[in-house]
Image (tube, rainbow, N blue to C red; front, side, top):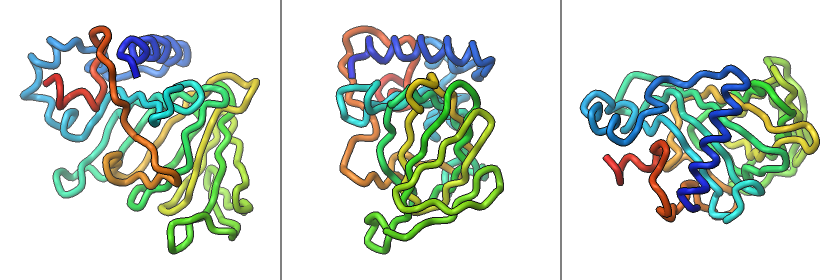
Length: 224
């Protein structure tokens, strides 16, 4: 992805979150100089990869297959005491986050506002392929059965709990508008705990055609 594209996605994301009155922590808006001046006091942010996260999953087309995320809080296994994580995401209409599951993380996905979020589901089998068995999930604490490959549609205010080993992909329902999506989970490790059904890239390779408006979490190692 080009840095100029990432910057434009950031600007649109900030405007959408402001529209929905979702406020990020102050350091979300720091410049590179701010980061350098505060580096000694921000080890949790840097080490646990909090902050802006934009990916096209290697597709080359962010709006077809991609995701905007901001990790607000996150622990680090065997490094600190925080056992939980929280993210905010923006999902466009028909913008796919591809099929994946997590070996360690258990998460709630919450529609925080905007359009409807469609989530397609499969249970994984012992070989980490799709199972043909139906699966039981809970939406806002209410148990329901979903057939293999079936979908759950979350309207604003609704949520689903996804346990380890449950394949899921999601996208905004066509004609309903973009979706503000929350995630509350156990500790999140995007470097090692994503099992994508097809081999894809989690973090983008960035072409630096202009300076970053804000650093991505994946930028910290290169800029700080």
